[in-house]
Length: 68
Image (tube, rainbow, N blue to C red):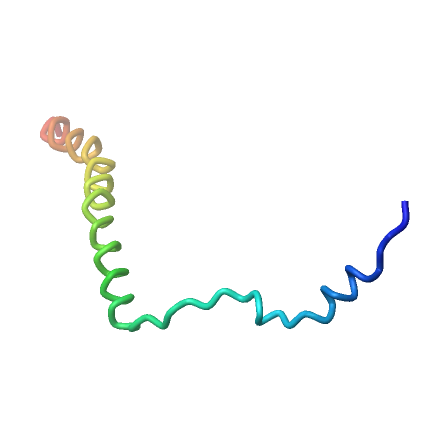
């Protein structure tokens, strides 16, 4: 099996920007608004999980705390 160096030369001579994918420019304010909406949609489950994590300890203090 012989390697064909012509194929490598063709690839080496190509301009990388010919095959580059360009993305349209987005308005940074729109991107920021989308990010804030996504972050705020995650806050309710996080806060609920935080409260439920502390609830057993708080309930134990309420139920047993008056024994003193």
